[in-house]
Image 1 (cartoon, rainbow, N blue to C red):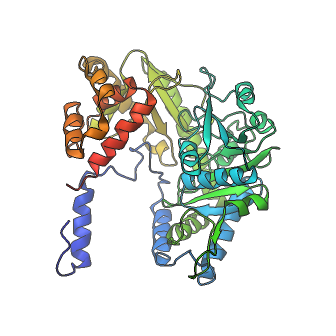
Image 2: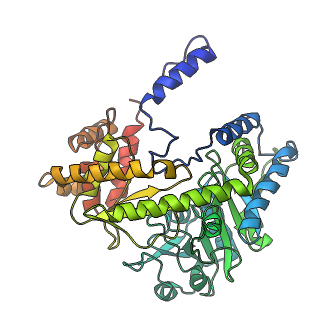
Image 3: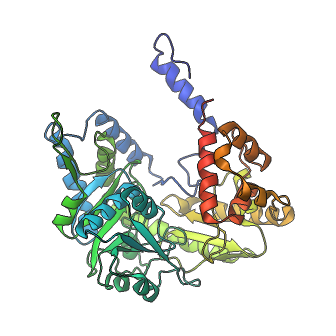
Length: 466
């Protein structure tokens, strides 16, 4: 972008934003089954947006200067604590930051212990936290029928170096809730990743779903994370991490007096940050209230049941595991699910591809939200049509030798332009409509470490400025 010599009008800028968003997927309506969460109630989203803008320029760096942030955070964290068994919390920018703080607190509570024990289905945010904080990760296989964590296998992985074990409620890939009570009973600190389920599972339980105990009411659970920008339906940038012990919350903080400037104490990874997301979350919780969330829970549960039954009726598809939440993954031994995803996108639906890992087959993921019920039959019709189209097309098979070529490349020797040319030869279009089946097929054939290296280069090329 060339910086303009003279400032542009707001009208001109908004028109430019509309043009730039022309190829974006829609954030409302339920056709994008990942990344966005929709209540189907525009007045709620409007209230949150107005509150967000009202606090946009308020800086949460110093709550003594802006006491409104203290009042709102107490209310938001209190609402989460009330739903999840108490505790002492911090409002964060998202699940990754909540997990980062939980891992930091566990590390600082156990000096000399530097290992996290995770099921393979635990979110990559734990790997990111370990990478940033200088810890090690020990992954444990899950049951390949239920996809739930195996407490006995996790017990064998725990040793004197373990500072934290992790359970998910639910695990994102397949929507199943790990056996939290058994994992929390292993005798070491336990974090429950309820980033997805923390503000979902209690309302599903009220709607009649069989949801096991997973929160701070479970003995041995020391911390839990809960995203409000998922099934709390708040604007992005809203999560809470709760600690059973207030001393652990203090361990998540960072303070420094080793300079002559302003007093610095941060409860989060960020220092200066807008209060917009906090205000948006506060407004969303207030606008919906308990009854609003109960109604959304009932609609979400019914939509999930219809989706599961509908998927089971489509020849060649099978749901993985027995989801206890509204996250559903399905696989196929008859059609290439990566091709299926491309065909569904042509029909206006985004289904999220998930690569194979640790004996778990490649699959497609659907997040069911409050708005899904109104369109679940249309979604199933699109999936059925995309399945037949994928059957006709056949699988995405990388050209002979291409996977080996990619595996043998010195990626650091390629600049972003050269990598973009390589990616284009595999079907990745950086500027046009994405056809990702071949790209995903190549990634699926590579070992995880090489997948990571290729993905880093893909993003670097995508964002290259020249």
